Length: 405
Ligand code: ZN
Ligand code: ZN
Image 1 (cartoon, rainbow, N blue to C red):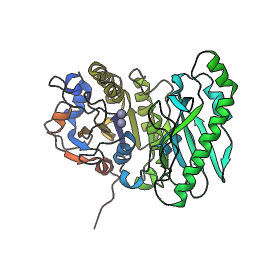
Image 2 (cartoon, protein in one colour):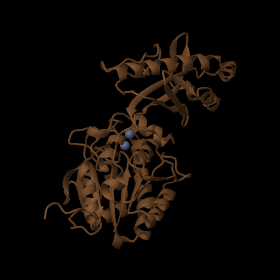
Image 3 (tube, protein in one colour):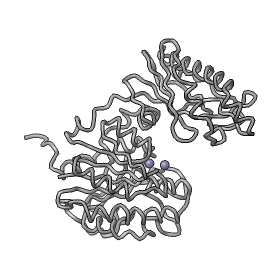
Image 4 (spheres, rainbow, N blue to C red):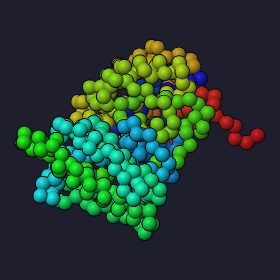
């Protein structure tokens, strides 16, 4: 038995004019899954807990985020292709613009000119025996990794997340000498980077063209590379991930999953999700467990765009679920369709509302015949916690261990 877990990011919602986007969208293939499968709702991290996408995915994969999660940084770093070592401390970073000591733009005007060259100028720094790795990601984003002995992620961020203020100095958040040392190194890097960037000819050119300089690196989302048992060690199954979102790819890499990149996919509402479905279907030949992540649903939710979210759900139905139903060996595959959290359009942010869940395979079916939040709530799975999902998937796949005699 194989397993395919499909997660539409932020799919769950509340009512807009009496309907959720899932209720308003035409989704015959999802409804088929619901009719032939068993449904329920799920608190991905815990009842009343408002999850991030990283913590919710850890939980869906059966890990306790309250134990293993320290921050977003390491997952972003891994997603960006930085290989981390135990004890590394990682941050998300931004190129920003500083004028007269004040932050005038946290994203350097979202202008990418010369950022690749500026990144090169920031390589190879070391302070107090701590190596600094800096890697540019898409747009103005980057990741910053501190590598050395005795580091800690109990330090404050240098990014004040507002403009018109001076950048924060990182401070230790506890009395541990490791935190003191980490904050010191981060501040030294920030100072040195500012000096280098200010002098760079790239910024002189940007300013001459009337653009904002990219003369500051702001760091946030500190986390320490978690000491996590790999997915394969834990469950004895080989797993692959299909996602175009660096954070989620990073979570999967931290769990030792193989990440299959689909160059045509971009993680937005206009992503080529059909190609992702193709990749996931193909991966089922080689892997026991395939995880397919679709981001566009969350993007439309953060924009508060009902039409875009509904349209995205219809695209998922037609371009992802349809081909999967047609081409996957349904007799030998458990298919799970769910979300990592709700992102209600009205809130434009994640909420603790439970998400719809459907499991299709060798299951006891129920009376649910439409895939939505409210119909799934009437299903045979009732309301479960995200951390229990893997147990159910493994059991249906014949890969669970007997507890007791
Ligand atoms: Zn999410
Ligand atoms: Zn989101």
